[in-house]
Image (cartoon, rainbow, N blue to C red; front, side, top):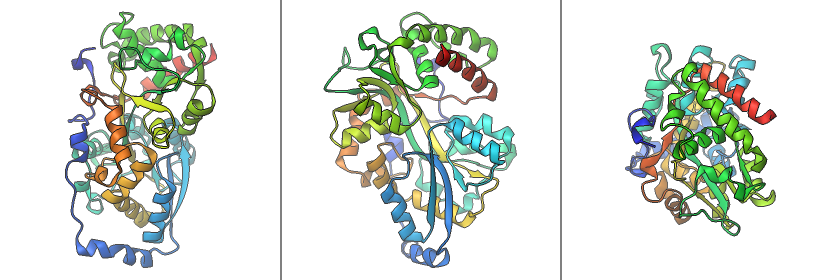
Length: 383
């Protein structure tokens, strides 16, 4: 697939160098701030709706100990869950939600978010290519950024090293659908179907670039997704498990007989770090890259606590400990310096060679695209 056909996340692609370069030095006044904050915000709380494995217990405990703020954490497994909860409540009930970078076109018209006061956010501590996403894709009606980067990662291929190995050194999205692996694979329906399309491009069943052209209009989308859906339905019998969250991915690899699956990077790498015979790697077709953010609903009540949470999350030492635990990556500059050797080894194993230059960032997703994709996903699931 020609790199010219790939969309990009804002203006710069994510590389390890842009993610980890530099770190701001805290002032003496900043070092003294947690005690002041703890006294001022004692017995306060913050309500967070976030992906189910993003806030490790140690991170939560450290935040509460440092600030006196209690975190009420509701875990989710998809962008659909976030947006549906906010629609149902008209933006009430949570102080922070965590939509993915490509969701801005869906959120803007809903008017369920409020802009951040960037004077209260240390943007210089985060990767500038990622913070610009808020300025461009989440600047609704010129009111400023409604989104800040929090965690980034990819979707690729994970497998049991004691039961399977990719041919030719690198895995493929096609391995999930292969007859050779029948009854022993898993994936998430909508992303697995998109990546099946990327694989189909490499074997001549779709034209190069078709999956990205499908984002342009319904007219261009439907013929492509008709072919992809038919192809996936014909091979659905080869799938063991459909997942929608991190725990289901882990359980599939450990307990459900899955030997190869299309997964996020975090769950299998967390298992790998724990000593399980699991590997995760970017596939030949390129891993799908995303940045999950922090956004503030219109009904957010605990405003001071929100900015304290952002401040804490953007401390390199705190972010580094978190990525050590959950296995994803941080936009905070210098965070990797506070992660251990296991994280660094996992990153190297997951993205060998030119994998980082070959990322497929999720394109901005219009409401019409999401609606039509759901139509085809439901057709696949009900077949």
